[in-house]
Image (cartoon, rainbow, N blue to C red; front, side):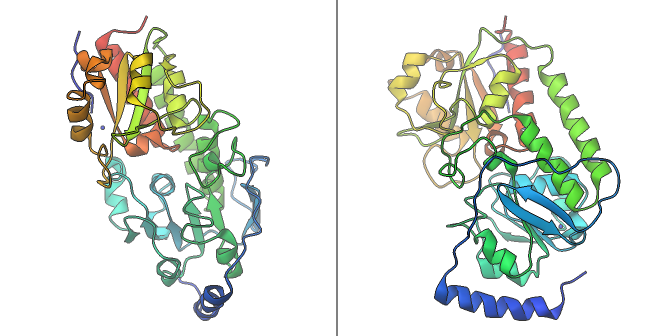
Length: 360
């Protein structure tokens, strides 16, 4: 048995610039209510390989979005959304990215280098507006919403359409959008595929969207199609040493676990990232630990080496079977977020299970 560690961007017119200055000043004084109802009850945009007919209207997370023409100056506010746009070959139509958790996927690095990075974390509203965007997308309501870069109504008042990933609203209640809260339905890859198809329709590259979805589906089947890990239990540790954030049943980690037929030892909670005690992890004693190697370094337990050092020195975690057998499956933080990187996570977990020969 091998117990080694597994490791993996047409300018806008002058009216917009004038409007930006006026509206930002007004918002700073008066504030702005969003009037948004972000729920999961909505219909898919019609998907086909034909050209998009504009104006295109999409019901997106309970918010009606109308696109008058293919965006030429897009800003993506989260890495997940950025990597979809880059995968669709849209770097030349992007004027900014932000909120990065990990290095960009290697196959997207060259195109990503052509797009200005506005901020490693959340940029200010003014920084985004300085790019004169004609479209803004995000993966999380915590970025595109109250308490984030700006509420969607703020962009709407400037004539800038916005798009939020369905992965952060479908199967969530209102309180859980903008936060790692409870899911009312398990996340599936269909929400990621829907995001790809809707963004492809918005940018009038539907064929590319269908090709990309087909590629991800093939990778999913190749990684998980022949795996039966029903005898394997997993715990997904994202961050924090003292009271660790682990994956609940129904987020991206749930897709990864279910794809290989394994069991998440914390699948009895619908909270995406509950904080638990190490004693509770030991009580459930998973076969293997899926460890997030986060590029950020904001708290203890972000980096892989700090995770392993803790696991192998703490008197409670030392007793874990996964620690004693050094069954660590290393993934990027982005692999644990609902995105195209979820497929990366599936591939890494499936590879480890095959290598260790611990599935049934």
